[in-house]
Length: 369
Figure 1 (cartoon, rainbow, N blue to C red):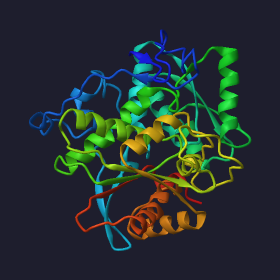
Figure 2 (figure 1 turned 120 degrees about the vertical axis):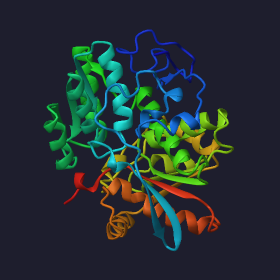
Figure 3 (figure 1 turned 90 degrees about the vertical axis):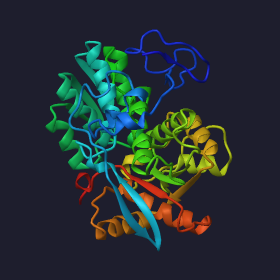
Figure 4 (figure 1 turned 180 degrees about the vertical axis):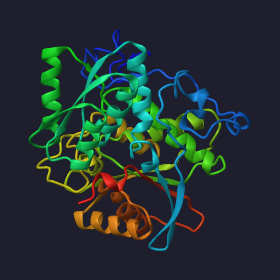
């Protein structure tokens, strides 16, 4: 895998031991080959995210737990027709399986037997599942306050769980201290660009499911922003390949109590600064005071003509109830999109033919109380 730093263009010699740019400490990126999407061949392939072989590494899908093309379910939000991309249907109940399958297979190919990860829950559970399948021992650093169901899921896969007291960044701090003392391989969903590479399949699926047309608007919950970045890179590659004629508007939705991207968007900033005084939120999966790829998120939003919306806690609860009454059991992190859609539709004209899609990122059984 050819890694480089998009901020200073420095190459990376050791993609296993180096998780950020050795020159500027920025996040790394993969050099990707031009993609193609042969519709006649795709229709004959198994219904998995790895069917898009011409846009993925040749080893994509070699490590699998049965990933699926997740369904698009019609839903009404205040009289507006929305399609919900239900990625809680993935094997561990989270969209993150798309990225974990690629990342862990890469480690397995290179003979890694032990790795570490930090997570608010879903990523730790997802990487733990694929690590178990790959025969890799994983140590996961999580906030002690994370959903008990997510923590139980991590240990069920045989991973070693380290509960860290305090807010989410404390888990990363503990992990980095561990790496400094042990030289462990960091299987990071935040830093390793292969994780975002796998999330691109969300964009590929959406276009194919919509009869090879891009939606007008896609809403997604954003903490670290892997969904938004995966969608942007996926749609951009499809546009470059001539598979779609435009990029959708990407709308990031955050919890108002921890909304660093929203603050940067309002300030028209070039990067995302740490969020001052973050508070506890039901949407724990996106409660990240500063995303690693803040510059890239702002670039993706501006290039797509997108927007950022922050929602109150009461609206998250209302979203959970509204989605549940429609038969969809999602975790609070996913439920932010409900109010995001309502706010967007009040700000922007939305005709009956405008295709609106929202990503549901995780299953509600992970966070039931």
